[in-house]
Image (cartoon, rainbow, N blue to C red; front, side, top):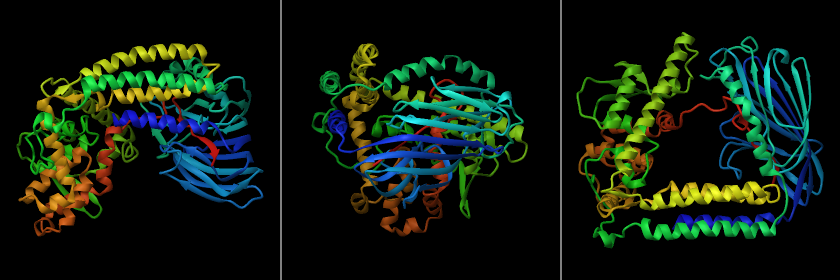
Length: 578
């Protein structure tokens, strides 16, 4: 219920933003791209702003996944201060910012930076630059000019420009593009360059697709492009807001009724369990399955918790050498949980019984050590390892989801079922209507995206699933255990009796995503048994290390910015002021 109210509150807070007390426009926007033979791309951007009233910052926003180097910025004829913010920005992306006092003026600003890992080397040797030359996060129409310089002539390349009604001139190794773009209209290119245009380097990503696959995906790019352009064609406001409120009101009323009838969680009084803390493991569930009773979903830390489990059970030895952590498989025969056993088999397949650096796992999966030694063999090994990893992750998640969500003795999914059925019919109807009137009501499209995202968020969250009475008791025990190991005041008064329990608790804390918090609580106790335990010392330094952080990010390991078609390229972002 709180999530529903939160989304309604967000919608209400968004509405006043459509009446602006100040305004800006971007009259001209020029971008120059130069692709070097080592795969680095140098970018220069120049924008002409006309500002009404005062602004303090003019900025570019770029996706956080982009690797931006050597960024700088300046203002023509005006003092301004440049900074590059990588995180915690108003836009949520990384930002290149020029700070100054901008009031009722026209100002030219400049940004320069370099990009790496935006070129893909395909399986058949071609190099691919698949990139949004002009991102779709710019809220203003502008006269756009783009130049793209590549190492050799365009004659031997194949390129696909995802845009229409533009002016284009190609001379030798340079492409010149110009167009009056709409607000939020991207310009994207997908170019295939022969293998002799660039050289292998760590600034280029390896990709398992082929040039033919890219070309096949490009056949239908116009369909998605046309649909997107329709969605951003500007128009009117008051009547749109009224319709939007009606659209928002209907699903939330229905969702509330479904939640109240089928998804409201049993109270402690209804199940007769009143303990706030549970100061021992409630049962023998493995860490990954236990997380379902805490967070009601698959743990994103499944791989790191599996590693911690193997170390705890001494199936692997964890050693620290300087700033690196090494694992060595032992001959110890023990029974392992299902997911831990699969992780053990995966590691053994690629590292055998050898001692290896923990960072080598993430490096191999991300293709970062392909250039070390035999490139072809390393590439094949890295590709196969990534495929096996993804297959393992999919199998584990599917198995555990089935074991939890399909167990009617502990979990009730009626609410989710009814919410999904309603959402399907509702979204089909609403988008059919949207497509009919999209050219007249662009604001509606934006809000319908909010409805769509909110709907998917709700029906895929734990809002519409609930525990049975038996499952609720187990849920309260495990959440009580989580509260115990994260609440310093309670754990201080009731510390675990044996050091070995700390090791076990850290494995579960890893699965719950709270390992660092629990470790902090343990250290705060300043227990002599902890301080004198060398294994726990290695554990504690490992949990706060880059090696551990890399393990936690492996569940999202995937390739990006490859393939073809409209909207799938890397890059993007936009420009604005505040």
